[in-house]
Image (cartoon, rainbow, N blue to C red; front, side, top):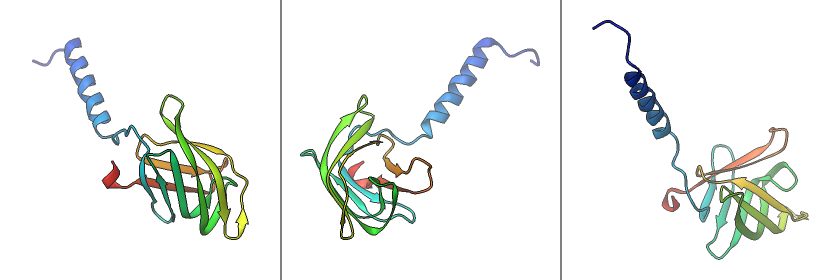
Length: 136
């Protein structure tokens, strides 16, 4: 049969295409709790704890001042879910880069894809951390 394709067949093709595209996306996680480790050329870890606290150690990017760090950004604070549970609000209570103390503030970052990305407004400096497999 070489005639036109029925509407039902178009619908079936569209549904199959949509399922294959969504099947390739990364799984959505529901909680930021766990150990986040820098990937690529980035350096550092972010431990988000069940008790509502977090610790960032030896990071190669300073998200509070939007600039690179020499693997010497360390911070502590508290966290909570925000924006319909799609972002984690990190309330940096104490932070330092090397010997310099940094003014604390709150930083909102999406987490549901299993990655956290902190970057400057121009997109020229950043750090990306991935939730370790044991925590996904």
